[in-house]
Image (cartoon, rainbow, N blue to C red; front, side):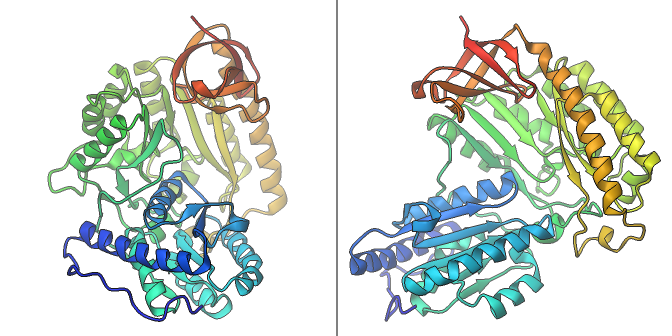
Amino acid sequence: MNMMNQDINLSDALPEDETSRQYYYIEKARLYVQELSSRIGRPLTFCVTTFGCQMNARDSEKLRGILREIGYLEAEEDQADFVIYNTCTVRENANTRVYGRLGQLKPRKKKNPHMMIGLCGCMMQEPEVIEKLKKSYPFVDIIFGTHNIFKFAELIAERFATDKPVIDIWEGTDQIVENLPNQRKYAFKSGVNIMFGCNNFCSYCIVPYVRGRERSREPQAILDEIRRLAKDGVVEIMLLGQNVNSYGKTLDEPMTFAQLLTEIEKIEGIKRIRFMTSHPKDLSDELIEVMSRSSKICRHLHLPVQSGSSRVLKQMNRRYTKEQYLELVEKIRKAVPGISLTTDIIVGFPGETEEDFQETLDIVRKVRYDSAFTFIYSKRTGTPAAKMKDQVPEEIIKDRFQRLLTEVQNIAAEVCSVHEGTTQEVLVESICDHDPSMVTGRLSNNLLVHFHGDASLIGKLLPVHLTECKGFYYLGEPGM
């Protein structure tokens, strides 16, 4: 690519502290960017494209923050000088999508010698992916995984200095680097990582293998970050982890998730607290009690069930039964009346029978979810479930999926409509996608409402009268 002919040196010695060390590389990368920008006569631009979950979305905010700090400006992907794909690998077709996008970038990069392409995220933690990228996509400039995202500026500086592709994949780490730049998508709400990795090893899931083992951030670091966000105008936070209910177990001085929530509640300026994802096996009575008396924790709980069959749940390594799940739901509903429950359900897990599927329909009817993310089982290479016998035929899975979807949608429409005619507090999030004379807000229970207003309302908490339920969202009017 012939970006630079020589390394750029800073006068100060390289710091030993990792955070300071990365700021050293941020400054070094900034000098490279300034030099190239001056040479081509315009600012350099970037685009980060995110695939996958909210953990990835939060990681992308960190990537954006570092890129802005070193002098890049954000642009659309088809115009950007630096294109970064933050990848997901939960399903194998996600990998195929990334390869397709890379193929589209190749001719563009040939025409633009200063263009760079970066790949990061869960997909990069698979050794066979790295080998394929080396062989078939050698034009990719920077490749890194989930464990070393904090090194982004260092990797950029290395790419400029060496004029060679940089591949930096770690198999695992217990390192958590704090206080690096990030660029939030919203001014008024923010995700906050409280932990990384997962120890559950559900038999269908690749996440523990690509995100690593569970490790919790220090509570003081979390609280300090949230206080800074509150001072910056954030009113709603989403606490993020693969299993937030097991927070604190890896700390030198263990702290429960419920205890962390209690401390977060004390922070002035934060009006709403959300969290995901919760694993049913770890949802404690202590947490339910904290939720019941909280004025800030939103009245919404995402509680993935995955299947209603205890036999299938055992095969999934979920470590709870249908009966235990239903007892937990009853306990939650008793403690937090009116709480909105949502879930994840997989259809067609290996060996699932019609009887097993009927158990899933039964749990949907008994719990009556506000909504459910329903998935057709997708064999994921590298997971125990991929090797299981009795893979369910595709036509049977599709039939069950449609029946489940119908059941979920019919129940959800009934459940969501109970708020019609009430006035609820709404956090205004955006201009309505379908009508620019309206704004879109979110209720505490996570339902959306559209009502007339303008951009000046975005980020404000307002009373809204819910005039009409449209299934999964409301139409409303500003309340008094």
